Length: 186
Image (cartoon, rainbow, N blue to C red):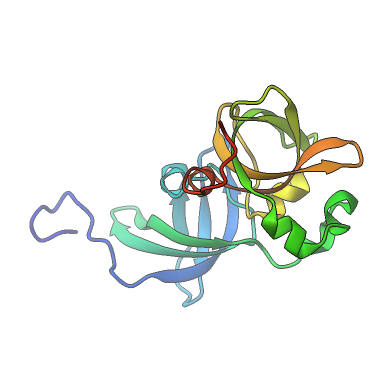
């Protein structure tokens, strides 16, 4: 707790690293296992939202700051999320056949989730300023370190023409597209 105000938890200035044990976007929380051991660390959805995401894939590596509370250690802020190892193994054929440089040269575009059903494994989004629906596959989310999306959620996508139509090949926090000169949203 802060010495100035005992009600405000003191955030550890040293970042921690760990692995997401599990995260349930419906419940709005999950837990991280620190690389240094110790008890599981609570990860609340609001901390993820402050990072620009509403979910995180189980097994993702995470760098974060934490603080001690009456209920235990909680994540206070996130500085980095790395998708889980092995996420690349399940690459969709539409994306797996793309040249890596061509993919990197594809501009990030700001978009909003129309709907996403994790149980079905897919959903759709709309790029700002365009009417066309963009297909979102759950494997693309996993490769991007996400596990679920909520209707209306803003995000950034690299959009390609796949074998079955327009689809997201990469998904990031929406700030990535807004800060890009090539946002394509107008």
